Length: 126
Image (cartoon, rainbow, N blue to C red; front, side, top):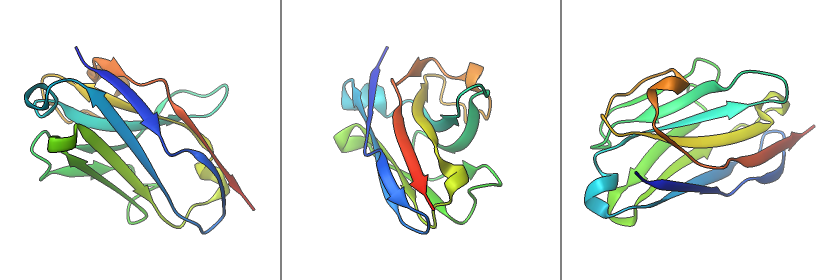
């Protein structure tokens, strides 16, 4: 098991950038086994996939709505995964969650993930 804590959320103007971080409380060796995903959720809506990165950091996948604007990366030495978000839009306003999949699978569905952070709020103003 690994505990995940997101940070970096806040208020940003449309067109701006923000980087989210997700720190894992696990040994570096354990963390590096996890594929790490980012999801987001608006009030009253289902949690939706945003991005995922493989355990070795070489493979990534993105939702169509963020392709070209968001970049997921990881630093296994720091037990941290990042989500760089550029060109933010008001519709990017959500609570963002990071999640870990111990089997290393790069799933797009939330049920594929075993560990979740508490989420960080991002608000994009017009």
